[in-house]
Length: 430
Image (cartoon, rainbow, N blue to C red; front, side, top):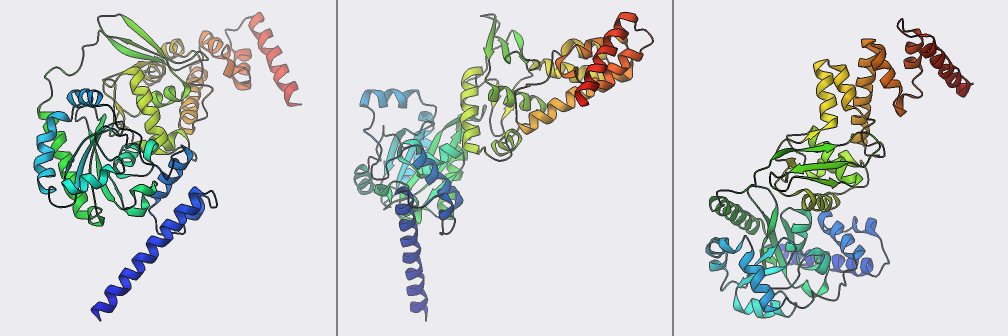
């Protein structure tokens, strides 16, 4: 009876393997689309990675390109933050892999393999698919694979045999966990175990995860004492009005620097200002677009933004501001909370990121505009009402123009202007 059950399980496994390979062949040939992949026994993580791999032009019949030159690889290794943690990795993983058919790979954050150690026989076989130091094993270069996809998603990943996008890698399974800078949360690279089917097990994942934690603790203990440069002035962000958003920073040595931000980067900064506790990539994606954004896109945008403003300002896991950033938006909200409407008007040069269609920005824009308008109308000060109505968003504010017309302090000229504006508004509705 036991033999019958074992035979049945093996037959089911072969059938499942065949269905995965068949689905992959049809997908890369363009005969089926992503929706078809949901009908086969594949994790969503894998199917989404296949779609990214195909979209970025990965060749399913080729491995990575030639490895980096020895001199270049030596420079990469010597300057990499994980170099000092190699004794930890070797003690926890490599020492147990020398006769097990398993390889331990350590990559940089861009997917470049820095070290490959472990079973010598497995190493010779893996070299035929260019799984060697210096080769690019990022997802954009090789398609779905554990170290590359772990870096693309910034999460631990297991890929089994035929789940790989590249057919050359199908004989192997792998488990990878990303490593992060313990201070800033910046991805440093990944640790990967590559071998037979047993490598993609829960026990292997627990082992690699524990090693990653040990490596991050090691890096934290050996961090230089002075890790952040002193800043001369607080960073400041302009988000209100029609002008392009700008982030101003001062480092105390080179004076003030101005970074003109793209619309997406300005949206992200505005949301980080309103969420000092931090935001995950999933949460950011939902706040920026309820339908079309995925975490890979968010991580790519965050990577670009951090290259512009510096890792000392924004950290990850979750994404958050490492120091206080002033802003015209923050000043306006603070003044309203304090009941200082004149100061709020001084800070308010127009709507928050008026070109943004992000749902969370639209809600924040409406909150600030509505709060300020309500405060101005309730206060009743003529000069504040006049300043509000001079803003583009108040041109159609009939209640505001009526309040100006009826204000006891308004002179004949002001009343005449308000009356003309009201007549024009009513004619538009006729």
